[in-house]
Amino acid sequence: MKSQVLSNFAWTDLTVVAFVMFLSIFVFVLFWTFRKDSKQFYEDAGSLPLSEGHPVSKRAGVKR
Image 1 (cartoon, rainbow, N blue to C red):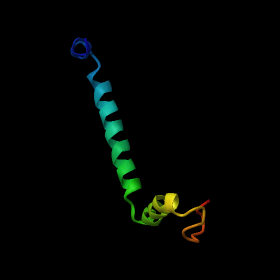
Image 2: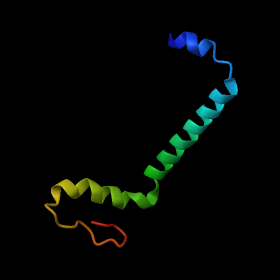
Image 3: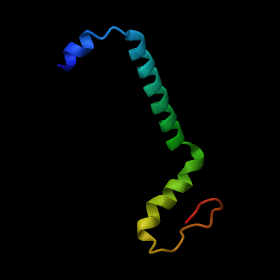
């Protein structure tokens, strides 16, 4: 059924726009996740289950 619907879909421009939007959001999320400034944040978040309620670092701007 899915192949029948996609084969009769007449708006190819809409498909291209949706693909470009998905690709740009995906690249943005990858960039945001692996940026240089976020390494300390993810290290702090990764060590939270082991910290027994004590803050790991004293960074400003990170709410605990």
